[in-house]
Length: 177
View 1: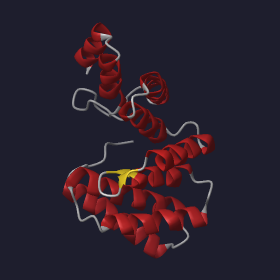
View 2 (view 1 turned 90 degrees about the vertical axis):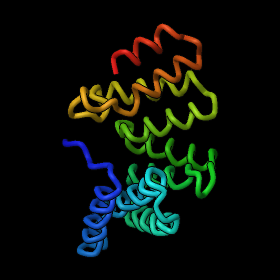
View 3 (view 1 turned 120 degrees about the vertical axis):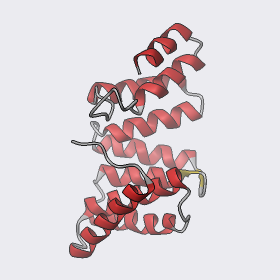
View 4 (view 1 turned 90 degrees about the horizontal axis):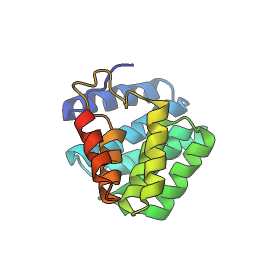
């Protein structure tokens, strides 16, 4: 398990390792998908060179050509469609992440992505359902040490509750995290 270094240097190290992996085995679909996802994340999180999105697009397409049933590749394609640089393409992002979940219903990252997507478009009941599904699959919310990590789903679930004007419930979640 182990938390991933999400600093710019850590992300670049991960990208370098994945790039090396796909150079060693060009048919490694999972590595292509994860490489694409990390490239998108680097642009989203650290304002990295937006040309990385072209590289990400190429990696994700390669992953899907190698294995069209790879849920994480579809989730990565969602990430590519749902970002500020390329625009917020809701319809395509929604279709991609829903397809990822049909392929792998236990993919926590896809439940998180779908919950976040629903939240941003005001579908609070659906957002809550996806975020709760994520937490049921990963009660630690992606954290090895919950005292040093707030996770992904819990803070967003609190925001959903806040927006639905369930203030006591939102506050209770915030106090736990």
